[in-house]
Image (cartoon, rainbow, N blue to C red; front, side, top):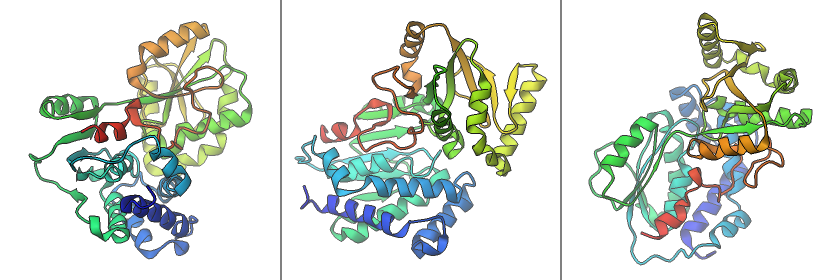
Length: 344
């Protein structure tokens, strides 16, 4: 696999990110990368320098020879014919669609990409870098805004509403259609302050806009929420970011006018709610009586859940603070996209 030119290009991209994106100081960043970061933030103010830094550095840490080859070792990358795969991408967090593109690129297929207007600069930059490192495959990835008619398979990510359209429109082609999902945390009451602080990373990273962001916690009856509030207080500077503050103020006003019972610490609203998806600045919670009852609840709603953060609760749980650090084999919705594209 080391002789595969696409693999080598991806490894060079990882090296580039690790070398040139080494701190928050823009002067240490490659000028081209710093420029595209400014463009990304200018077109989507949720993409702050801090969040862009996290995303790009995370990909630099993932795209090492050891991690990449260990991931790919489970697959046979030889394909009989190269197909054209259409990617319809979301734009809720920076580079949210890069894993899908990486899968298609490494599998040897060609990719036609419809970008979200919310994240229209970062992915073309990454593709330009791949083309620079592997000029022979410059046509492997194309971007389009046009109505696409010629393609062999599709991977589309969107809302529940758009998914219904995608399922109808792409029904005659092999497809993966992703809907809304959220992540949850299970709190037992025995967590350390450090673990609860780490949970703040799962809640607040990317302002809670990702499907891997924890939007709801399950807590035992009688739980002392002051433990959680104190542990996440270091994240309170979020309230100084205008868009977050505006959403927090709006949702708080709606809850108060509706006379909902809420808990509030000045930058995060806790509301008891059965829904999985909480608005920005809010975190829903629900009480549970027993482990057995909660396991049944989680299983019955598994199609709504991306990740479960817990400690010694589930075999497939994620440690506190780790939801926004997925590995290369952590596929969205637990659907192996690399296996899918290799089977075409």
